[in-house]
Image: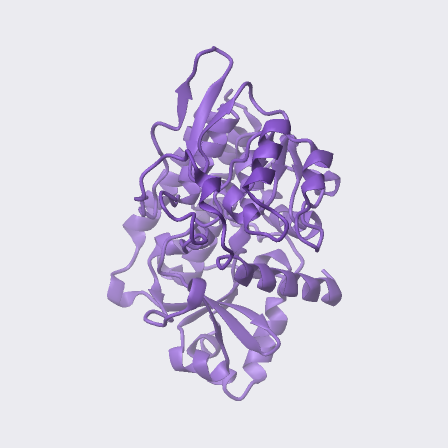
Length: 410
């Protein structure tokens, strides 16, 4: 990725990380939605019962997810409007990547996901054919009609909070084209806009992936992937050192000589590759709006993490080698424990946390945090695919995962 494109992505991502959460949406949007307010917060939860229900005809079925409630499908969607990458990863995981017609910033996000997919034989997608539903000026209603998808993987609460949108627009698109099926605020477990909070539920990446699988009627394939995750988590949990021996960890985004900081000790889809590993959060106790903070070198030095993880470092959006050198040359940064002990690592991208990306992310982060227990992370070279791990050091079976995705057992 060129410096100009990397800079474009950094500004784009920073804007959208902070953008949502303050918009006011009319309560009528969620009229008729069902479900209680509680949600599972198990770090390794992989199943959710009652996802799909039989309806009056053999062909139709319903899938339930907040904030939509019960969503009826006359048949399995042949086309899907993807918005954020975790929805794309969820569709690809159950063999329906070809259904995707769009993705937010497909060139940038797609190239980052390819850095992981290259280890899975037969798993690929042509990102260039996908339309960007948000080409820089917000999401226009007309683009939904241009894409003409059977299902729209975007949270209607998030969409209705954008300028120029209201609940009538959501209803029109649902009637004219197909239903919405998305849940945005599970990403960081922050409150949705006022007027939409009553009954809004939060899901783990695995709970949401199961629901996306149900949309495509791929419950069996999901269960097979969930079994891979369960085995991985059992291996990790059995090898975790005692809490007092775990490192303090800071996850940051480096931009213009400062740091945007992220929680590691709280649930949420964007933390699916680190929260289950239960490290000590270097920023625990700090109060940030929307679970994201801003910090200078002095603030980072006060936290002084044992391990510094650079957000999106494995997807070429941030050049970790350059960032490591920049921090090492700073009079305050060079004194950080993580810098002195050579524990500044490239980390995954929060927006990519579907089941495939999360499996790779858990393995990578486990090796970065606990090398004595799970083997040393070999490092990441900017612009290259994720490094190959020797078979005897892998924490999950790539070939098995690829066969599930490709439907070898179908």
